[in-house]
Length: 230
Length: 230
DNA sequence: CGCCTCTTTGAGCTCAATCAAGGTGTGTGG
DNA sequence: CCACACACCTTGATTGAGCTCAAAGAGGCG
Image 1 (cartoon, rainbow over the protein chains, first blue to last red):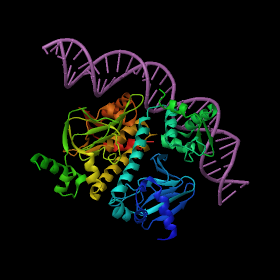
Image 2 (image 1 turned 120 degrees about the vertical axis):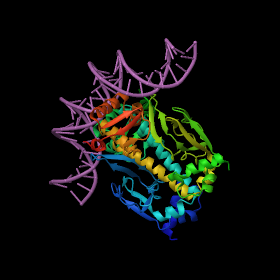
Image 3 (image 1 turned 90 degrees about the vertical axis):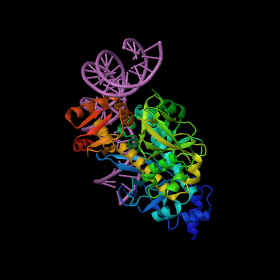
Image 4 (image 1 turned 180 degrees about the horizontal axis):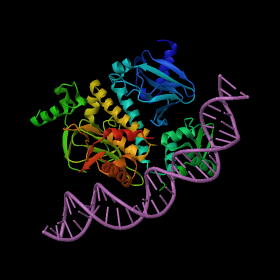
């Protein structure tokens, strides 16, 4: 095992995905893995292409999306470090990537070959349980968005931001991803202009501050209040 | 093994979920299973309750839904025979049902205890692969609906119907579920009235026929054409 | 320095929501 | 057996939230 690879294993061991799994086993689970480094907007997988590899996000973030028949981008999910992409389709006989995957800012991902998933991952109950947990989270986010379908747009945006939020070093609430208004719009199925109108208001009212695609939540209570408004 | 139980195993063996799995092993996988019989609208699981059992749909159909803060029902998925419900949350320490589950018309489901999932299912690569396939299908349906978010309502309804369609005995295309207009509306996040207006037009134009909540597609080409309209 | 992405603002319009009212069929309890 | 509730379907009139279109400024990058 190279030193480089050892480092990766240590990095992986910190993710919940590999919680309670020995480093030796982690190494086995990533046999032949390749670390790919991306810059902003680099394409990793293309929707519909044969899927030979699945990925484990190491750092940065990736956007999972598809393009609608009308030519609009529709964002399916944002994958953060520790998340797996394309794992679910690996068992299929001739898997195709179910979504396009693009880096959001500088990011790193570990690519592992399909055969390793079939030979190692599937046979490891620990890992399967963790994968199902990740999927479970993804599903529940889908459902939460579905619940907001009929709500006014401001509620949808508020709900989305609060779902992606975490505390930063200063104890402030902050959205971890570098999100553009367009990406918010594409996630919620609304137009950029509408998102801008709502969020500009919030900035003016001091509910949030934004700079360089980083969004900080100043008054979370008011945002939460907006969610189940009406 | 009782004769009754043998019958269930034979029934299960026909589902893709258990493809290539010996009857003895199927029996093992359903140890302590209980067949529950439901009539229309009976509640099986309630969203948020502790989840001790997961289910395999035997016959009929079940509606997976949640209620939004505003009090509207939001339909997440329709489960047909051979589908599993609540399997994904079983690995969690204290799982809660992620959705409410209700019978649509007379239906039967096999309930299996969580411990069996943890001790048997998780350790069976064959089954895990099949479960992941089912999930994969569910995910791709989610995504397809997401793609239609910005499309006109008629396109959404057309897409939904075509996704649920199959050939019946006479070779006609037919939606397998007993769907009400309200359920279509709750699935798409639109109002009943809007759904009725669109579908009434289609009936008048002879694209579909409906009776007793059964929907037959007479001119599938025209419906498909409506989907990627504009 | 031109191209591209991202953001912003305004004016007008449209699609689907809302509200209202009525019809039908089924189950249920007196 | 009737009446009453309830779920489902239908139609019309009105309204407004969010879309479209248009135009423009501000960075960043090759």
